[in-house]
Picture 1 (cartoon, rainbow, N blue to C red):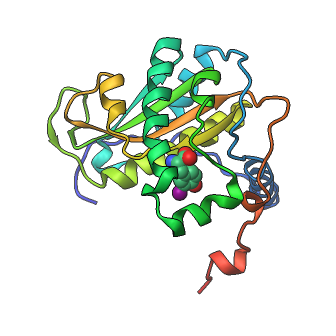
Picture 2: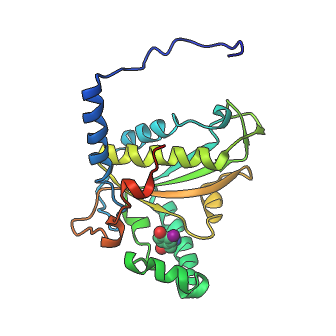
Length: 224
Ligand code: IYR
């Protein structure tokens, strides 16, 4: 490799192969218990837990390590109300026809509709923004690379961290989502990427059967 500043990979842990097998299997069993939940309890969740999960998301790999993301964690009821109102306005027009028949029939087995009461009920909404320009420090305005891919990976880390902490989540992408920039007071450089709803499930939370159908390893992977 070309000359560059570096330090030894001192925090890598090598496990015996048998342990790798059990660790990989137990990770699979843990993550298999993650479900998108649409019915939340109002029970509060400590800010420190959300902070740790966002810190975990912030360790994700990104193009040139520019970390082209920003997370706005919302627990303020007024802000949540604004988000719910705007989201429901867009969702109503989506479900009343804008989505089109094919999309609406794909959603039918999930039972979703324009009611987004969970946006006020859940203790935390985390709005994720992608940043077109940036750099290795927040005050830079250089080009960012692979922004969508990078923010997608960080979002995956965040969902995994929240699940591992013992919370349930929902990924929500109201369409259009641009109102989030305004509500969250983000500037022109930030584009709303996704909204994650996080908290405890309500007592009567359910999982649609459709959501439990996962493709088999043979269907999703090829080994050469
Ligand atoms: N944003 C809408 C619709 C929706 C779209 C997809 I693709 C989903 O997987 C789930 C819902 C909503 O939140 O209801």
